[in-house]
Amino acid sequence: MKFDLVRCITLAALWAPFVAAQRPDSTTLKQVIIFGRHGARTPVATPAQLTGFSVLPFPTFSVPGQDVLTPNGKTNETLLGGYFRQWLTREGLLTGYDNSDARFVYARAENVPLIMDTAQAFVAGLLPGASVTVNTVPVPDPLFDAIDAGVAPLDGTMAVASVNGRLGGNPQSLSTAYAAEFAMARSVLFNYPLGTSPPPGTPKGKVDVTALPITVTVGNGTGPVNPGGLQYYYMAVDPFMMEYADGMPEVGWGNLNAASISQIFRVYDELLDLEYRTPYLAQLQSSNLGSHIVRSIFQAASGTPMSGALGTPSDKIVSIVAANTNLAGLAGLFRLDWLVPGDQPDVAALGGAIVFERRQSQRTGEYLVRVVYITQTMDQLRNRTPLTLAAPPANIPVFIPGCSVANATFDCPLGTFMQTASQDIDPSYVDFNH
Image 1 (cartoon, helix red, strand yellow):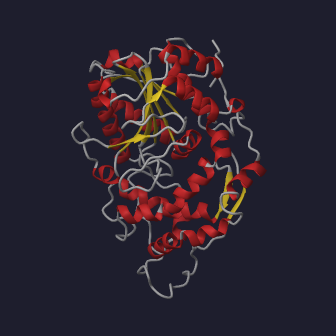
Image 2: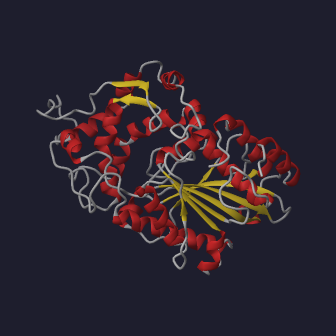
């Protein structure tokens, strides 16, 4: 059965009228959609590339290859799934009888090993006594890669203009804006004290990723714009985050801690923002994903199967796992922001998840949507800290612009949420079959 979004909004408005702000303890959780990032992995660059970026050899991870979930990354995902198990049992969505609960859980992941392995590790913590199928479709998956799947045609000229328009037409100005971050990264990669004046020259045979020209040219489905040197900067510093999260004893050859890694990654955070949160690109890449999430919420609320939704109306828990680029894009589409203590703004951390909660007012019976961002902190990841209700991961309430009311949890009436989402989602970029 195929519903258009306008009809969904009308039904939602009639069936779930707008409500005043609800106290956090005056609602009952009915459904969650957990949209999370993969766990700690091996670097994206090859060993040969990494050798060219640094004067010191990068450490060897416990598993070979690029973009592979590490054993510690898997452990942390299972710990996170275990926390969700405790929380959702307390909230009444899970009963503790895993085989029975599994009938109301739907899992979806991008069909690449890193993402699938993460999804399987998460559900192993969520329902350790049951077997949960992680659903996939052949790549390119329209849900996560709308451009390459042909759902959202990329206008390269518009993509470049939309990003350049945020940079005053001068991408190279980022080198000045992030001069401190580039200086820190260079000192670590080339092994000299930060603040050395003048800084030493580039060692023979090495690439100074902090000095490569920053440009914005037409990209592809994987990266809608090509950022020039910023892409190589990311490849060079990416191992530092993974080293820390994987629990390696020395990070950046003993020169980096959580705070300095966070600072170095500000450049990459900006790159993600430009490529995935820029309005044109967010709408292009994430309308299909956003539509599926919205329709999945309404499908369960109405009890009516819908095309373009995930799972079935009876599913209480929908788990979706993808990449940080996908989380950044969805956050850009719905204009969601968060700040985890110790992180930079809007960081889609390893394993972190945007969680959509459908709640019901105990007073009126009306439905609300609540959004939170849940993630293990960098030190929880590094130490593989057991998570409990008394010692939880970071749990950050998220405001939904044009929708949330002014209470502590930023609740949004379902009807308003549907209406706001319809203004954010471009239906011409939506595939109702995948």
